[in-house]
Image (cartoon, rainbow, N blue to C red):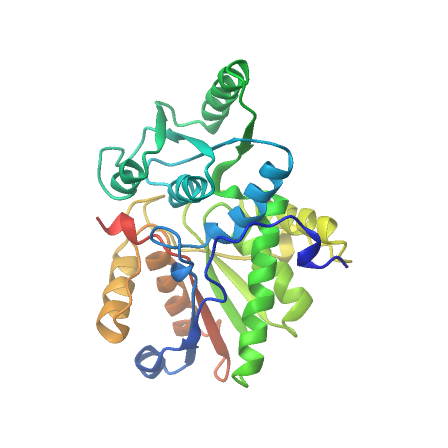
Length: 318
């Protein structure tokens, strides 16, 4: 199997991020609950996408690219962090976003404005239309003498997934240092790459640790995640293959993507008032609500130690 050092990588994150026990939440839920603070990766407002971008931007630079194009919803954390990382490295970026939901200058759009990001909106519900517009912009950039690199929604491609395989390695190394055994990891399933990296990483380093993704929409995350696990395993040279049935997904997203749920808002309030930590209504609030549901329904065993991955996204509170 290849080493992570075998891949081009730019240093963007402040790693490792902290991993520690949540004493008040643990007491309230009657379980040993730990948190991995990937909201503290150190670029802009932090978040999970920085780990993916370390590999994706390095791949772009190795190919001589000088522009990154990516997409997402109007409040995309991934898109905002792409612009921030490109600023830091002196690359151009174009964010091609769906003109849906809160697209006005609120939340991440305020951050994008501060970053000087080139934001283009596509008035469509279909990512097919968005990707056509990305291709058109890329052609314009090439005609102007630039070399663009296109990244799909969320950076969820096999190479980006490798960033979260490395995060899983980091998690289990920290757990070993703290003399704890993590039995179960719970994370958001938003575009699939973070979850896929954790699944593959748990298989490689986790000694039987289970991983559950809490879906934030009705996408077929079993299929998406399995494909990314297998793609990342192939890149790494790992002897791993999974099927969609092997991926554990909890659908606990309420009325739909980016629509706050009662359970998610309750989880945000509990985490804030018990631990002084801030979750968001689109991703982590719903994911932590899912973790609470798994505990209450007995899907997390009596003596299990569970880890919650805080993937960031604070701007959507605003």
